[in-house]
Image (tube, rainbow, N blue to C red; front, side):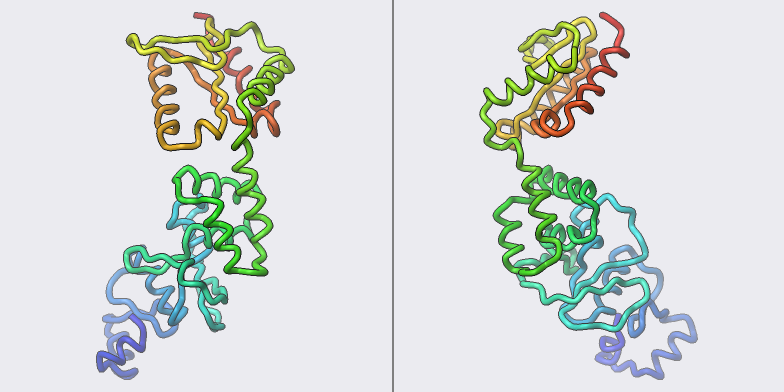
Length: 284
C-alpha cells in the first residue's frame, strides 16, 4: 500500500514510523509499504504504486506476463508512466502517455497490450530475440498485422517501429506463396544438397489411418514436411500437424518440419539437420 492509501485510512507518518519500528510495516519503495511477505503479483503492485497514478507495467515486465519473452525474471521491473518520475531502486521508469487501447488489465494489474509491448521491446532487443517474441505471439494467435499497425499509428516516432515492422514482415513471409513455387523451391533444395534417394508423397498408415509425407526416406524412417504458411497458419492445421508428428513418432518415424523461410534463408541449416538424422538412424 502507498503512503497516500494509508493516509486515507487515517494512518499518519508518525504512525507509519511506529508500525515500521515494530515490524508491522516494511518499506518496499519510497512511499510504498508491505505487510508480511510479497507475492509475485504484490511485487508488481508495489511497482505500480511507486510509479504513481496512471502507471502501467510495460516492456520486459509485460512481455513476461504475455509469455512472449523468454528472459529470466529479474529484480528490475519496467513501468511506463504519463509524467516524469524520480528514479526508484528496482524500477526502470519510462515516460509515455499510453492510449487506453494499448492497456489491458490482468488480475487488476495494468499491463501494456501484446502489440504495444512488442513495440516497446523492439527498440532494445536484438533481432533474433525480437523475432522469437513476434513468432511466439503469432503462435498464441494473439498478434495480427492490423493490430500492430494500429498500435504504431498511436505512437508516432517510437524508436521500435522499424524493427517491429521488419520482424512482423519476416514472420509473414511465405503467406500467399503459390504452392507450385513452394514445391519447385523444395525440389531444388533436395537436389542441391545431394540427399539420398527419397519418395515424395509417401503414405504411411498408423493403425489403418493414412498419413501422406511430403518427402520420405523409407529405410531410415525420416520424413521432411514443408509447411506453407498459406495452408498451415491456422488453428486446425496447427493441431493436425502436431498430431501427425506424434502418431508417426509412435511407430518410429522422425519428422523434420521446414518452412519457406528455411528454404529461402537457411537451407544449409535445414539440410544439416536432415542429414544428421539420416546418418544417425539405423536402416529399418
